[in-house]
Length: 120
Image (tube, rainbow, N blue to C red; front, side, top):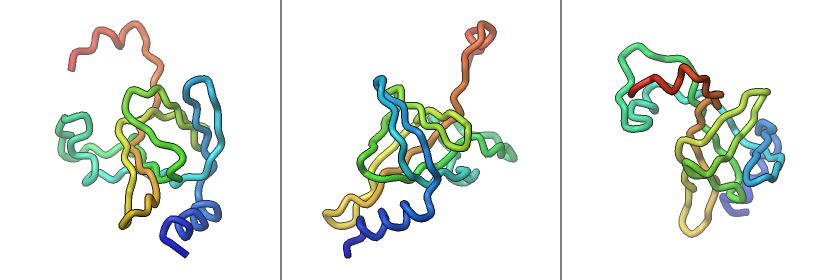
């Protein structure tokens, strides 16, 4: 049994059920969706996060290789009733074996008229 097969077995058994919506298609999959701890999110979007800020808003997604994500691909991932958009993502490879895809998720936010006035 290779690493990919072992991971898929663990994912099927212990993963969260997620819905992936992209390009007019909706798919159900299994993935691990967990809070992204502060030490891992110091430079999300190339911005330093102020010391002491920890809100669990960003999530770490780990799922099967059949779903690949990148920023701006308009993918919406729903887990436990919360919608997320992809900040970044890559595949994790062991030797020549693609094991899983990871992504950083941000809560999906509906823009209000006031949000357009915010300057970064």
